Image (cartoon, rainbow, N blue to C red):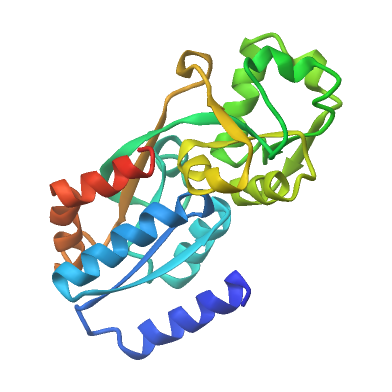
Length: 241
């Protein structure tokens, strides 16, 4: 099922039952589907509040939130969410710092980022360098390590982090830039990964943005409380946040 089709079904559900306080619609970047899904399941089990979720490219998630007026919380990068036009947030709940890694498929090996300049790394996948936060971070890392010229003709741009992961798992690329959360999730399907020095890219602060107009809803307030619990923190840490 496409993201658009899923969103339409979710939106129809909420429009039919707008008055119920025991339902919550949240969105998140595709690269954080696993931790947000686990958080949602734990929250639902603890409170009985049903959580519907949409995932995808952040631009698409934000666009759906604007058009529907039904998305209460969006998980994503603070730098991106704080600058969104046409969608305000009453509060940003801290989730954790995003961490950039370079990964490689089974059969490969990488001991240093500088080795990416070697001929054996002919195809290197990178998320969208203009709107995907880890594509932006990877670009910063490459530039600040003076690797831009060496890697210019090797980079293959994908739309999202999960797409880069798919290329790594299938062996279609020799390396790829993803986030630690994703690397931990697919570690058994790839050759390995190397966490990159955070001094070489701008800090990535992952937050849960409470959309304007939803902050006083009981379900949202309970989610805020849950995010501060040791259980929630444990889930996030398990996923590299």
